[in-house]
Image 1 (tube, helix red, strand yellow):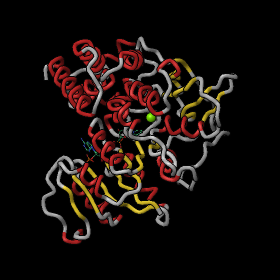
Image 2 (tube, rainbow, N blue to C red):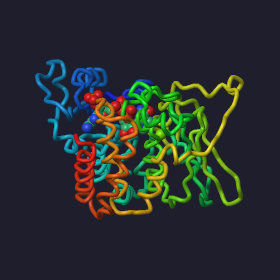
Image 3 (cartoon, protein in one colour):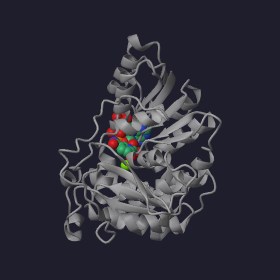
Image 4 (cartoon, rainbow, N blue to C red):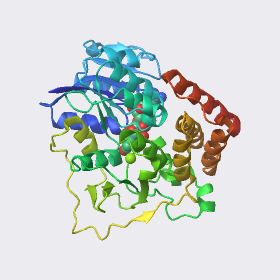
Length: 381
Ligand code: NDP
Ligand code: MG
């Protein structure tokens, strides 16, 4: 029996994690839950899973229902305190954006195992978080939940002592895969939110349309698997059945396949190295007409180019990319800027700020603050 803290419990990943907890009540116990503003959904989850701790990070708690007196509620600025104090073995970090960094850091400081869904944590604090996540005698202290990184991690189980030559990170290509650059620039919010294969929260769905999601994942993979940027290749695979692949010196490639359903990588992180029933069927190969692959196009999707440029620039450049993208996506979601301005904003913010230091956590927060300010200036927000 493992106990789990689920941060972002009311979101797409959080709810699917709770689904898996319900599926295996003999294996998992909820130790803590968080939400941002969705107070009623948090109360409901606390009630359903008898969570002994909970935190609402973006609003005041108000009056707590009487039947929830068994739960210790933490105030909006006490997420990290809850992460440190709760009785979780594992902390599943699935809150949006850089907000997940402090919680991930707190989890590791408290010796808890990190199940990482949120890519922004490694994009902003890569080296520092990885340094805090060395393996211990019980195995890894960080397990990826993002489907591509889970796929790579699963393939690595079969790699033995052999070194990986190339990571092939698959991407669906999003709703604008076949669009011209001009048409992408003018895409509407409704068009950006129409993801062809995955059902996810709004921020990551827009990131998938711009392919900033893949850019963040390239950066995430660099840190998780300790490879150079040049060893990572983004491959567009519109059917989202091959979740990623690793290639070896001899030309052999291993892939992990499955239907696009996050419950598989979520549960694998929760039960590694064991596999349990997840509620997800294997792909129906007789019904699959084809699996296709094509190169990512950095001309139409400049995010792909920016991932390599920021990794090679070093310092806090990836954190600046992330901060500017978060500001731009939030503005796009509010209808304040056109889709094409997301790229322009990120590129201009990177140019304006140059390479900032990233020696300690405080540097990361400072780079993020400067990036957000420069991005808001650029977008005139
Ligand atoms: P959602 O938007 O569906 O959910 C986000 C969750 O985080 C909600 O519980 C929300 O609370 C909470 N939250 C939002 N903003 C903040 C904040 N500033 N501080 C603290 N909590 C916050 O997102 P997803 O579940 O889709 O994604 C979560 C993370 O997982 C993202 O980093 C995403 O990139 C990553 N991911 C998601 C995948 C997916 O399939 N959905 C796939 C791979 C990675 P409330 O409900 O109260 O607003
Ligand atoms: Mg992914």
